[in-house]
Image 1 (tube, one colour):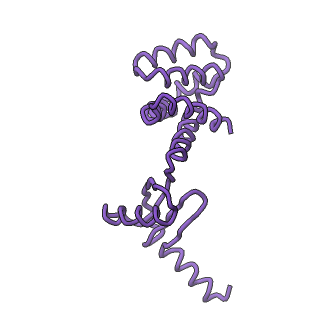
Image 2 (cartoon, rainbow, N blue to C red):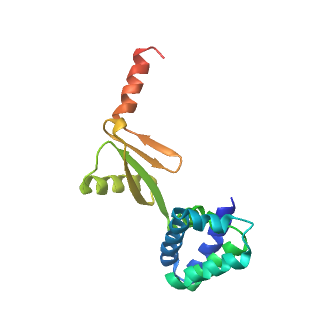
Image 3 (cartoon, helix red, strand yellow):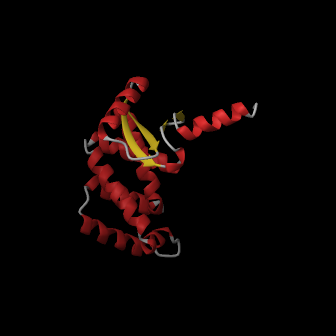
Length: 176
């Protein structure tokens, strides 16, 4: 809930300044940076470390990474409100909000093996005609589904996996 509020506020500013994709890239980078450095995450999350020390660390990192003013200002707001350690979640929400505003829906596709580019294109076209929206696909591999695919768009799941078909067949044979 908190992440959504911050992400929504950032989206408003970034869209107004027409730098939403650039800010998204920077925020994602910063979210990964903080998340992957345990000590850095601990410094920003620890309430016993004085604010001025945290601000000093943040300002040094901002100067080294040379981010946009929008991103730098947002990072300062998160620090002031003791939310910088939650940047990864804010970043994910920010991406979703930008997609919503652009009419893009994210779809996650799981297959047993890597999918050729022409199949990806056909799948994207099919999902776009089904949803009536632009679709951004991400692909995952899970050998347990045996074959076929499972596509997830929001809370809707299209399950065409061999594993699922076998489970339905077994349930039918068992008389369930």
